[in-house]
Length: 279
Image (tube, rainbow, N blue to C red; front, side, top):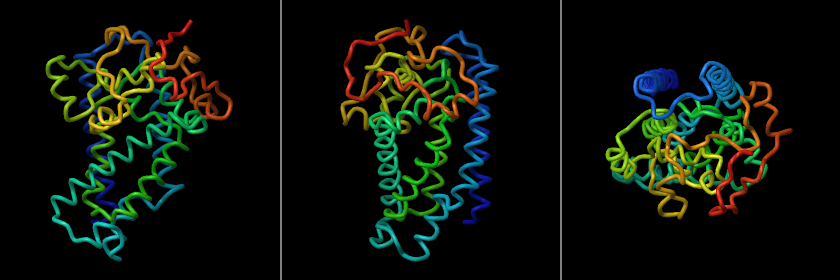
């Protein structure tokens, strides 16, 4: 598979899923847009464009290239041990997803990394664009982690493309301001992280921010004790964001936030503390 083909596939899925979730948010929103969308979308999309440029130009060796090189040279666990293709695919997806869970946990646990991750959590609303709003340095660190794991595992390029596409798609889906019938949601979250499940993670309440870290698969939160089924408020009443940032942030402020911003008191060892709201 050529890298050009991979980019076309991912772009088609990206714009397709983005369009579906964006239209869904307009037709059947879960929450009202009390903080508007115009300025938020402009800043968030600017961050998304910058991240795409950073990935392509600063780290040109993307995960797909590492996977292809692993197959050619026979490097990596799955290239050494010739497993059944189906088993290899399932194991690769599960391992990569667990790494993403641990990575997310790490960005909440390590103070320096939390400063980067604040850019994502400081959004006062939560919708399809929030799922892609990350500081460029966080994106690059995440990419290097994935490249390292792929280097060791040696999964096929097709599996990596499928995982990357699923990860982007699920990020837009579970951040979407979309209504799903609660009964359907309760069934879906047995297999995938749903918007109602992940929205709790974006609450200003410390005990809720430090829960529900999964992006694709919801099982890790249950296994690791970080799962929270419900917010202490109704979904429509959850206050989104960080208590120390209660205004819309400009693009420039988001870019310097990790170096000059107030990290607040969202340390991961505050699980279970009494929820805090902005004063």
